Image (tube, helix red, strand yellow):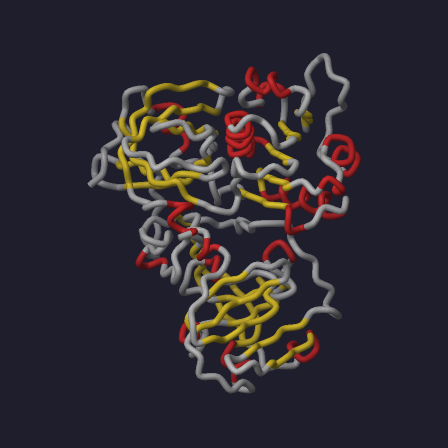
Length: 247
Length: 199
């Protein structure tokens, strides 16, 4: 029963691109309309399949960025320099085009509206995407779970959902690893023990922590959380390597 | 055939080896786990096998390292679609461990430090198909990739090759493990593309 509730049937469906947003110079949000979409949980992902004229196909997984909303699903895709699918999704796929999609997939890295405990979200780069779905789902559910977001980006022009994150400025700490904005009280640097102390819920609040980003980032941050006293069982991670994994 | 995406050609890489359906080749070694990486001191590490009748067999790190070892070079296939070919491991065959164990059970649940579990039929663990490995590419297996030791069952998707392994429990009934309870396929044969529980 648990399985059915989490997944429904994972079958290929045809989605239509009904809108898009350029998040950064290399990342694009696609708004997809999917007939008979079974709904999803914040944090889940979809498989997207592209087919060439000679029948060659390539499939990759992308995190869902949107809260559940009828038959629409949004994904935000970051173009990988040596990517096979992402350049097409970011550069070539046009509004009005159909594309094949399967999902939702994944039942662990999810936030459910029934969760009322504090939530600590920690994103590195495009790892913000499934965490954005959680922020949005939380708002949709009435915003009762106390939430904090720590979002590490290379530079100000690499921030996704910039305008929308303004709404959660009190809950959000942005940290820049390479270039900080001109007016910023923060130095450029990586997430470290001090920042985890300052910007995250203390372990005594027993938050559920969701950490998503590149492998090195997730390894470092989950070690910092564990060292700060957070129960490893309450830390959920989603990682992607240089060429593997999701996104 | 699916919907053709105008102008999509893909990035086909020339390869002599046929990959399982839907997989692509990678040369690096991505890391995917559900939580923080557990760090297990070797003097606290132990490996246990629990039989269907409740019998428990234990190996300390020292016991484990004293067992006959094998070198294996195998291809890995991750459900997130990367495949890595010709990976070199060293460790102890499950057959070697089972020489000391009396069991006729059909199913095994793999247990890991950190709480992860995965299930598979016992017949997929025997006859030179599975190992507990503690060396990768000539070096001690690092924690991020499952060290001190992980299970290696290369003919199934890689989530079955549980990292940070601490034991096996045998049973007459099949009990879904961690990912198997969260929508992933109960068996996970990459050549049959058994990624998700019903698709």
